[in-house]
Length: 216
Image 1 (cartoon, rainbow, N blue to C red):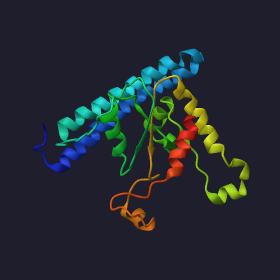
Image 2 (image 1 turned 120 degrees about the vertical axis):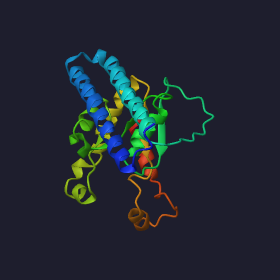
Image 3 (image 1 turned 90 degrees about the vertical axis):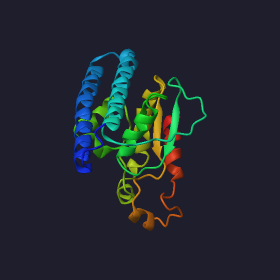
């Protein structure tokens, strides 16, 4: 609709609307997360359904922003029978932060709202971090090999904490997304990993096994 404006202006407008949308919906989700702390555990599933609905609203608003600002066409080939009442593990590649927005836009109305394994540092990102906490997304605290050599008692602790987070997925149908490359794609990472693919990094099977183990 607004595609006749200069590209630089459209970029600023698109980013601004997305940030406002994230701040508004993220604040509502955080409030739900705080309320959940005060409620009996038996009511957790109902709060989870509400936060998932708010995440769906965020996704649909992003879809409206895309239609308003961008001339983007999505091609989806799918013959499967998807349902919002089932559980899914989604495996995909990772190029930028926009992947998360696009995956929610494309699948949020067809399967349960996606949940991501997040780095512990993202917990401190304004609006986003606490909203993801309220949505029961697992936060990963990864230890370096050097750290584990000095603190062997920490070995396996990240998997244990992730398993505890995934216990909450049993009450509501959930889609867990695993970025099979383990990181975002860049040319430097491609060269360093000696990838055999032109646009992909080597997949990490351990990441999939980690996810399956956490989900039980």
